[in-house]
Image 1 (spheres, helix red, strand yellow):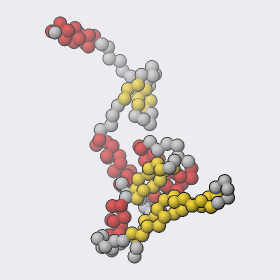
Image 2 (cartoon, one colour):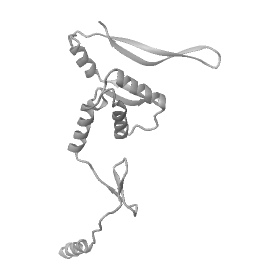
Image 3 (cartoon, helix red, strand yellow):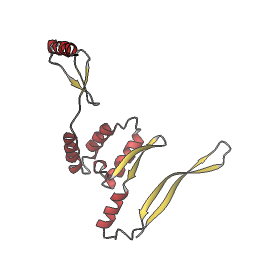
Image 4 (cartoon, helix red, strand yellow):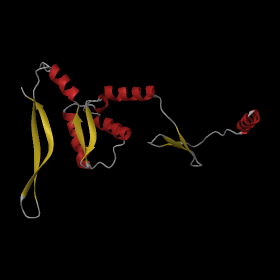
Length: 167
């Protein structure tokens, strides 16, 4: 057993360490050199949380597009059509929602991306507006679409539900 350890130790010492030159970092945190050898690296949690906090604190209606690009690349939101992206950006901007502060979540649903506002966000904003958080009532309104089937009949389908405060 000692011979094996000694031989492995000698083999490790004889390995030459080469410096990697001409590195390129992709958006998936993979570094490639000119020989196309892939070296994965990890970012510490402290660096990630510092970056997120910086972006979250500086978010306003003027830099919503930069925040959105950072959020998309961070959570791998791909294949989003222009209409969905514009709709999401408008909702985030009008309602002053910050996805990095967990005020809203962008999730795929039925082949499209959807904004889901966190329940806690609704409670906090209602409390700030002067409502008592224990006497809040929400109104539920289903939003439906009407389409025609191949026979010409009108078919209604519930697309999503809107929850709003009853004042």
